[in-house]
Image (cartoon, rainbow, N blue to C red):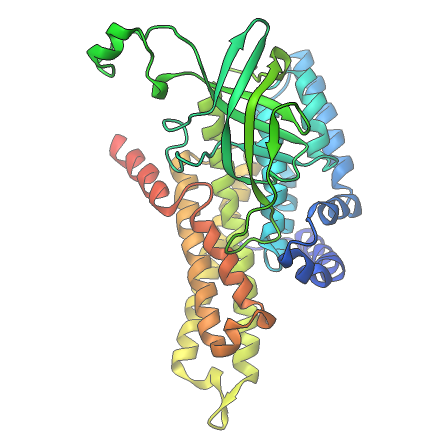
Length: 418
């Protein structure tokens, strides 16, 4: 794939028209936090029939799984790959936070339930997320863990009779303040002694205590309003204001076994790693949207802004900025095209490949957006000219779904293990 097809371009233009009519007029309200993004996203889904497509696809998949003929986790969506990417790219030209809010509910929350849930759990919790009827959150990050998401995890679930009692807190949770359905990761709180290995100290073996780092990761589905579950108000942050982020506090939340995701061969840790692949690869499409918009705005400004009697686009330093933006656009677009082709072929990138895509694309988007601010000069620092917002939003790409430093580690480990 070297360019968009005519059908792709028709979809792109239709999505652009909807964004111009519905999102751009609401941008100030989204940026101020006065307007949660969910009704807009539901409008997108209804306008393009994405809710009905999701419902039909869900019914077909569940029927296949019940009959034992399903494609499992390798189902790729085939010809719908471009349809998935194009709205992401176009939305990120205006409000990247909308994609974060949508992607977490669909790709992470619903995706986890579809991978690890029973047909009953999928029907109960995943379907309303896939159609955007309900808002989903994916809760793994904690205040004291950060990039050490699994090892530093302190949230626990203790088996009490037929139920689990969950305690702990999560932070930086996209959709957290408004989520109806929460996929929650925690560690099993048990008193079983560890098996003797070199990982355990003599003191641990003598005490019979299992190191918290080694305990099993469990994944639960929680609902808004459960006793002991508190969802904070949206946190204030540097960018992505159109994507509400919050904290979760759990105090003796009781969850039955029906809320525990146990289907499939992967444990909680492995299912989370699969989600990292999906999320990181998706950042390339988000980055492409920011890069394309910043380049478009910069070219328009370079043509019309005059200094010393000539347009600034005639100055070589400005031309250098534009040329580097175009190089970044081509490179990131090629990453997106490659990912679409992999999806169509039923293949998924490895964790290292997804990390490489995210590392390069996120850095490119942030650099292009910062250069756009510089090209605009004082105007670029003003929110009226929009590159200011895009620069703040793009910076988040280098942090969430694993920081740049974590991507480097995953890429290098893969190279060194060959």
